[in-house]
Image (cartoon, rainbow, N blue to C red; front, side, top):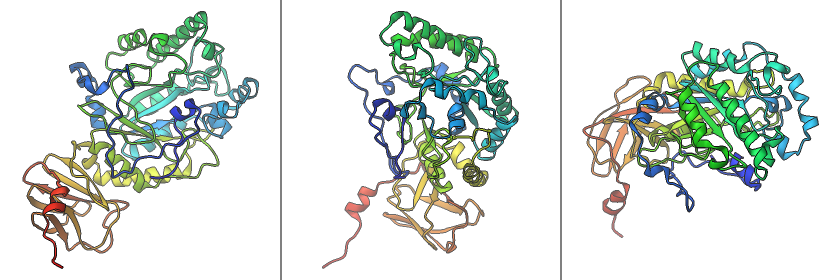
Length: 449
């Protein structure tokens, strides 16, 4: 993908710069930590983390939902800040924001149909509006336009579809009077930290078992300022089985590359979060939708390197999912119904070099996901193990092949792709598939002159 992506980090840095998503066919290694920062890849997962995260590693694919007053405004979730909208002009959105009952059931059904296994909803975004019932502020769904608890509706909808439940929570708050001055006023910091911890406590007390807590944007405080150690201690006392990310300035259980695919190393868990267009919240003018092929390629790239893919929807102010999002996710779900085993059971996969295919692996079976179908034959360069058999996953049809030291050549394929938007060929090998294209470049016989 080459389209421009706007990340929370870039907005905070004030650059307005774009981050281009990495090609689905490339491997990006995690960036080194800044001086003085602890390298999370140097910390092996604990037995308790392995226990808590087992379901998450098996889930692979989740739905992110950005929903709030910015959906009503319909001009990007950062509009309150990037347009410098005065508080007095923005807060009236809370009175007219009134999503239709049952909206969350639609989100959950769409997530399940797309092959997703968990959901993460914005309980409070940067604008400070709480989508849940709280005793700590009147700027919340139960006391404003909706007149009901949107988070509870979401939790019940997700559980009804058998999906794991995640809560997003923004530490940064553009509405609270201490949200910025906490950086320079100790009394304000103490008040704001207690408010923040209090909201998190309510979220993790009032809705039963919660599976994921997804912090976001720690500006303007560091871990000490947020008292993040105490925060996480409270979280795990309330929810012993929960997993938390790394955005409250602690290492957490998993890393969160945004709008790009960045694989961690040494067993460190990671999850790439991306949008379906260029906006997290609903923006009526944003029509730069990713295709289902791009979404599937991104998912393959994540799971190939041991990661998860958290894909966002931005519902309209009435809670309806934009038609283009529904269309794309429906196509993804149709593909997952046939090819899901190649995603959920995927292990780290080393073969990755192809101009028209991506790869995943389960045991000694290599799955060749052909996203640009070339016609009646395909080939893999540099496979170092012997192929025993091959078949089209969609039709279970056997595929003929030949193999020499330099390539596996699969022939007799139909001219048109048997599956859409990506066709998968299951290739059973006599050992774990490995690929060495450098050896091919060096050793393949060349013609004379």
